[in-house]
Image (cartoon, rainbow, N blue to C red; front, side, top):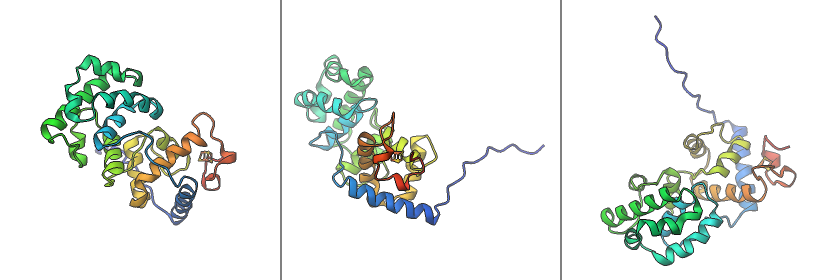
Amino acid sequence: MAKKTRPRPKKRRITKPLRDRLARILYTLDETYPDSRCSLNHRSAFELLIATMLSAQCTDARVNIVTVDLFRRARSAKAMAAVPIDELEMLVKTTGFFRNKAKNVKAASELIQGRHKSKVPDTMEALLELPGVARKTANCVLGTWFKEPVGVVVDTHVTRIANLLDLSRNKDPVKIEQDLMALLPEEHWVRFTHQLIDHGRAVCVARRPRCGECALADDCPSAS
Ligand code: SF4
């Protein structure tokens, strides 16, 4: 009997029309959002790491409110690791999933203090070992703070707009990241994310994209 094999996902061919369209999209994003940057307030790699962990399922605006008191209470891994868990839970409560987030913030702080001499590690491998840190958070810290992007941060805005622009046909953030890394020149990896997030907030809003006022409309297959 013939052996059954799973169909393998087809790798997308990067054609010249796709390359040309992408080049125009990147140019338009640079023109439209020249100052896009991480909207989470932070003064150190540690603060950025914690803010990014708290931003899961929460708006950056809410995280920025919460981190004012949180970082006033503890600005270093050592100080954060020493905050009692019930106090930490109260401090991060309004970001949602607060028990899990508080537990991860404390455990990650302890690991940074113990294993990394209180310094946030600057490799993907070491960051992924921290409790509650997945590729999105690690990519954000590496690209935004250490200026060493090893990938593209894929959040809900990037997921949605990369699909609408047909830069990825996948729904899984890890696969979308792979698609974008294959397509985008490396120097765009960090700012492309921030630009799509700004675009998702200002124009290509989730409920009703404002295609009529979108600078990318001519290069967007989903424009209506
Ligand atoms: S044309 Fe519409 S769907 Fe496409 S990126 Fe712009 S707002 Fe979003």
